[in-house]
Length: 144
Image (tube, rainbow, N blue to C red):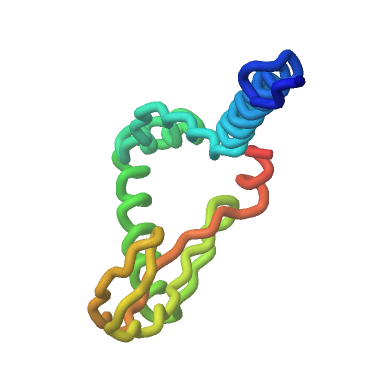
């Protein structure tokens, strides 16, 4: 006369508690696995202001022992020359600094696109020219 009901016999109660134990640990393991697989948040960038034109002129003037007003004229004319060259040829290299290029982005058709799991209606956009700047290898090496 052995009672095989799950909750009443000694065998049944240990089986139930073992099953509950395994289920709890499986859920915990899944929770920790998902937490470990979640993407890490990016560190916030510090609010940094770039050097102004006058600050740049001061630095160059002290390094070259030229007048600050002369350096300001040089910077202004350099900006004008770069603008004209980019407009005309589409590419300018400032030695030791960067290369400025233009790129033609193709037109996009109107329609529905899936972005981040949601379907969005997208308007058509015409082709356009964008300006991009690429640092020279010496500057890239500073951040490796």
